[in-house]
Image 1 (cartoon, one colour):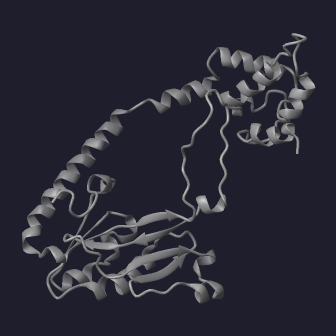
Image 2 (cartoon, one colour):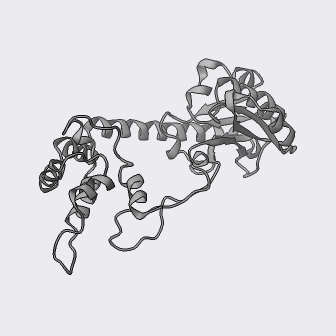
Image 3 (cartoon, one colour):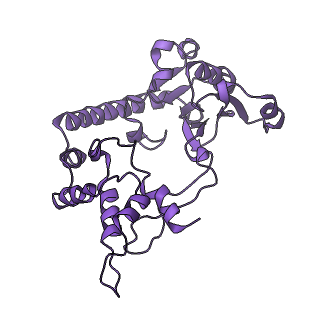
Length: 288
């Protein structure tokens, strides 16, 4: 495969659809794409002091460019620091609205209120009976979003074993107590087509006494899987002493579903971290 054919696949990756009119959809070109096309066209032969690439060569390497006037328009946009839309997008990236600031203040206050509420409850419970549970997503293939590159390199490529495996994931939900111990089995939700395990998956599935496994089409928990976790992981692990369960405010396990009514009926309690405040209440023992 030639270098030119390789460039075709990479240089046009950020263009969304084919243009049929000369400048129709021109703003869908990124600034980086425009700059790469101009750099290729402007490259000079040091011996002849002439352009190394003709306009036809540019159009072969950048097939979305269907007329030489694209290049002159590219120069205009780059000299003006992008199209009008790109300038607005750039402004939006660095704009913080009063609403965002107000929301952050509300979240911080709700976090502080939650922490104080939990602190008041703690003396009534044994450390081994204060539980915290949360869901964690794991990608099938771990990969880094950072790498070394040569100075001035315009495009740095990397390879993964499977593109599908870096966009798909499964969910793990452990439960720990304030004494730092894992409580009961860890719940694992796999991602399976149509939310069902095939015969081969069931046959080759690793079984362990401290792991309970189920699946969904997305690899994420839904309300029925929350109930499954409660019945198969949480309830069997509750001690005879009074228990306090701390969890986040994910909608799938909110109070409206009544999942924790039975827990409270046994003299136990549950508390949910405020919405959007999980990062501020990271772990059962961080603020207590």
